[in-house]
Image 1 (cartoon, each protein chain N blue to C red):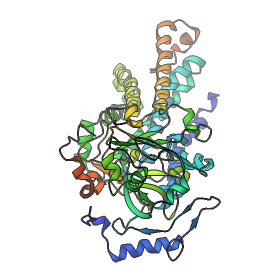
Image 2: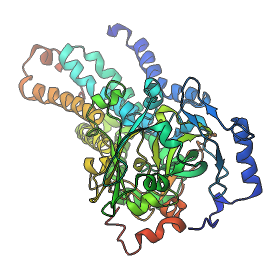
Image 3: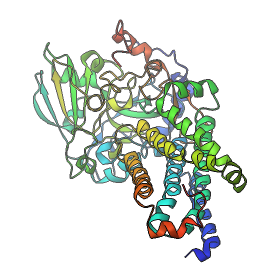
Image 4: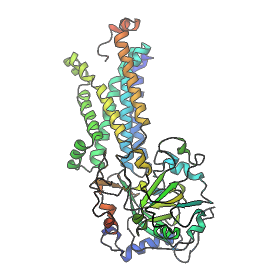
Length: 210
Length: 311
């Protein structure tokens, strides 16, 4: 499968752009419901969360399948997560609030769901900035620690979602559950999987696989 | 109570009346069209006039007001009601009247409606989720219905219930709300000139997704007070618990008056997104008005009440 990593990367890239493409298309078709700003906020938010989980799924997939190639999609998925989160933030501050900075500040201070959402984006920012080979090499072990804040981000993102829904929190809880399962796989692997065949096999080739 | 025109957006200008008339003529309502028949339904709306005190120029497009709804009986998404409500049978429709009043028992809706004067009123509609619309409703005053029911002197509240029928309302198979949906008003709120028992919108019968065949419209309160598809009306001496209050009492109260100064615990109520129907991607929020702009009609009912406590 991973002989064709480059081809697959192109496919994944296009897949990640698809939600945006559909939003633009629906915009022209007047298909963004009666409240397009709310709809765009919801879609960019939900895709950011889905891509975040997909990013987090790469290491567990490697652990479970032994296919080290999964790791090669992680950066792209992570950057698309940040891309949709940034769109989400822009739509909120620009289209929704009309760049009323006073209102934005009030929201950040007074609305816990905005506070945690904002925090999640801010925590992603340094990860996005350092997601290049130069920074990986330069930061060494610190890089890994920095990028472990992704676990915090997934928690904050789910909290953001739970606190904003009016009544039924099933959907955000499903995302949270997936996040927890992905984390659990890593924890189990970390404590009990050190001596498995897979681990030994990939020890040489793997560099930063957290 | 006088109908004053202190608010910019329900000015009674000749032009605004003319415009809304023109809309009604288009819908075949004015000009001798006294009987309006829906596609295959039997319920007819009696002759009605537009109340010039309640005209707002910029209506929300009908398409938006009829496809963007909160009606959890048909699903949790805004589009679900329009998708799922079509098959609900609204005729014949019986309303059960009871509690502390003279008139008791079931009454056929069409017969009930024939007792009242139907009129069109354009009201702002403010959802607790901080979006709003401007909708031309058609209905009769709840005050007239209350008088018709002859409540006893002990009756202090009017209580309403939505149809409970999971076969027709698939959302009721889930447990998002303790069914049936319940609402209530204090007697003076029920008797207020503004409170409308609504049977139509945009010159037509209410579409199912908007709460056919009979719903409540209380324009100075958040939209969730406007209970849909009403089958039960009861007069009570104690304040009933409305559905959203039952679900989350710290977030939704009995009064639910639109109030930009009292925020929802999780979001601000100071502003709202007005849904017009046009290209609205660059329309940022507008300021929410006290009592949704109906302060002159309703503020005296809440004199001396702490509105941060009675939200």
